[in-house]
Amino acid sequence: MATAYDAVVFDNDGVLTTPTDRSALLEAMDEAFDAVGVREPPDHHRETLLSPSVDSLQTIADAHDVDPRTLWSAREEAAIAAQLGEIEAGRKRLYDDIDALEDLETPTGIVSNNQHETIGNIVDHYGLDSFEIWYGREPSLEGIERKKPTPHYLERALADLEADDALYVGDSWVDVAAADAAGVDVAFIRRAHRREYELERVPTYEIEGLGDIQELL
Image (cartoon, rainbow, N blue to C red; front, side, top):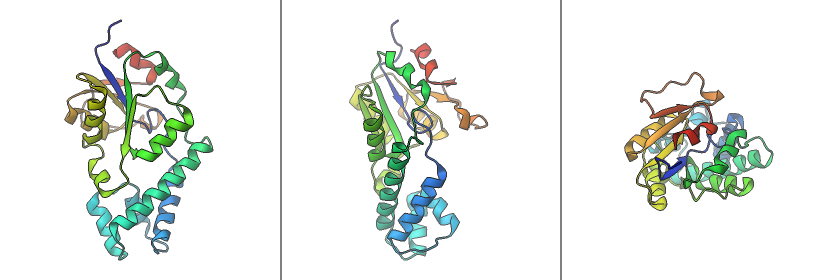
């Protein structure tokens, strides 16, 4: 059957792999603060460091008299190491229905808000060689600004795939917004952790799992 799309690009966390355990990430935030000499940071600073904007990162860095780039570098190193540990321990695993993608003839890629190195670790550990390209964000303040809902990495992936009419598959409002900004259709995948999740923007499709992708092509 001829495909309506010339590429399919996937988010990673919550789409291809299970989300990283929150407690592991919070422990990594503690390690990051400790690396820059901050002991027992307030809980709201730990939470902010999980997914800050550049402004909120600057705020908590100022509160502890730390350079924001130094803090962010420590944060990224700790998060990459923690997630690699979760991958190798089998706690951050592929969803069982990823096998449904093996028969896709359409070129595929990955675009994630996770670190580029973490996505590389996932691709290497699980042998995801069928994905032609993959992007995570750079471990820098610029990477924060370029992550979804900004379409920066999605547009780079589409250019690499030479795609004119692509489908993006994600599990978050930022995925829907990034796809809209890039001018491509989006399939929202409603995994178990998204059962009660509400979207402000209506996606092109809503699916239950990766097995539904073939029907859209």
